Amino acid sequence: MLFVSNSALAVSLLPPGEYDLPDFNRPVPLPGEIPYSPYAGRPDEYQPSHPQQVFWGDTHLHTIYSFDAGAAGTTLTPENSYRFARGEEVTT
Image (tube, rainbow, N blue to C red; front, side, top):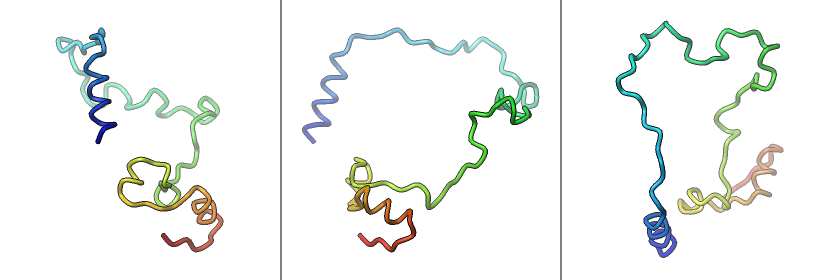
């Protein structure tokens, strides 16, 4: 709690910055006029740094080092996550 209140105080003492606001007078392109990504439809040789296989689900986990997971009661360590990745049974 002390960290949160100190953080809020620190942020409130920062000088105001300049912000780039969007131009609301600019016309919005209709769907289909531009691709959703500049890389859409390009052959793979033009985008070699982009991941070709994206994995979701069990490959994402948090350890006790993650603040949000630790606050929810997670007790897994990085060593436990490595054991889990190797296929071992891990319990918390």
